[in-house]
Length: 588
Image 1 (cartoon, rainbow, N blue to C red):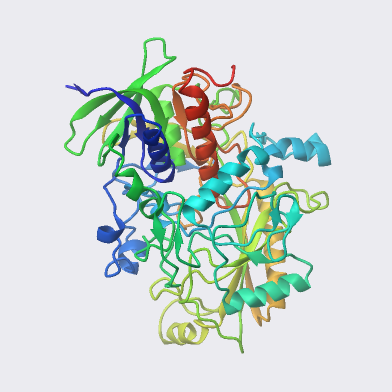
Image 2 (image 1 turned 90 degrees about the horizontal axis):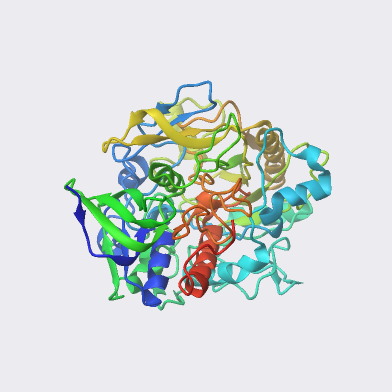
């Protein structure tokens, strides 16, 4: 029997970056807020203290901070002719689990998307013509502009204390920064991290090739900092335990470090952990949410009534909850109709690993986002006409880690085990530097998310089914960027260079990136978007959906900075407009 609880003003689904920020801002606005989180409570002092946090076996190999597949997984296939099968071990991407979500284990790259990224379809058609769009692509503009989001990018960066160097303040280019970025209102909150030897070689080689190197924006802080919420952070110690790990030093921005210490002190906020929301409840006419239903760790079912439901789970799980709740029309790729599950995208990559003879590096002295980057090949910063693809990639060089279990690069031809492998590991460990490219992925008619007709979760609900493969456009981009990375690696002095690019179909097995986007996208047309420009459901106006699920396609950057900016943008509309006059903020 379902137990009905007292009504709250707001129920927040998920307590990661977006959920913690939403809960804090709405609690401060005077609303009663309850956040419901599927995973356990996680705290820096107890869960990621200095004695246990740098445990490579526990976190990087056994994936202790990630979602157990037995709790939730999905099925995957490359195209609709295949039968989707369950992912029984996370590989290609690693969803977080518990309070903080992926904000615990991320590397810390915090980018602003470029102005052209938000009007991508219009930009491509204006410059190259409609025929230049990739076949079967569903690329679309976002419905919001960079200039509208700029104050919210700025706010998010100052909550996280991002270390970096501005390249454009108020339209005036700044020495040492990214000349391609959109105009900023002010400088980064903290100065760039200290560059490594590899970064200095990259900067010199890139500049000699006419590129414009700059320090990559980093949530691994260069110096002590007190953020806009009053939370104190410490300088990074370059320990090399960022991605897949919680930060014991309070140096990497996370919800635990930047938001939760303030949020838990709000008297009208409550968190319920190890409770899974199973659906958003709707009124009989389906046009208004009445709250959510959730199941606790003991299997007891509860109904939490609320006036406002804000979905803040991980991107693909946002989409699944909408499908399970009947919010929005599910996407049908054969008829190209419907919206929920449409425009799923990912991230593509390429790179060059350089093996050096007379140059040594210290890879163990690293941090997740400590790198030098160049944006000359990103977005529409170069002429795509001769290359036959759209989109682009950020290029960078830096050592994030040199950990003992998983970091053992060896030259091509080295045996996979034995004494020769051991000697190669010893001789190569300090003589490798990589130049990597993180590329965009367009959205396509055949890449989408829906509910699997066969497989179910422990609660009897259909699993999410992911249908995805890289298309010719992304393969061309990856191959072209691999050559650009190889050129820079050779100019850095590498004696041997091994390049990597997209080959074969997308596979769920090797890790690639946890940058899943789309499926509940924002836009200006209800026929091609789930959400309006304020991340409000077109169909159920008291439901808002935060996160990268709103991206119509993915850019050549990590998504976190844009996720944060969109969150503050939506909150401004919720607090400034919706609460004063509940209803649709944009006419359908």
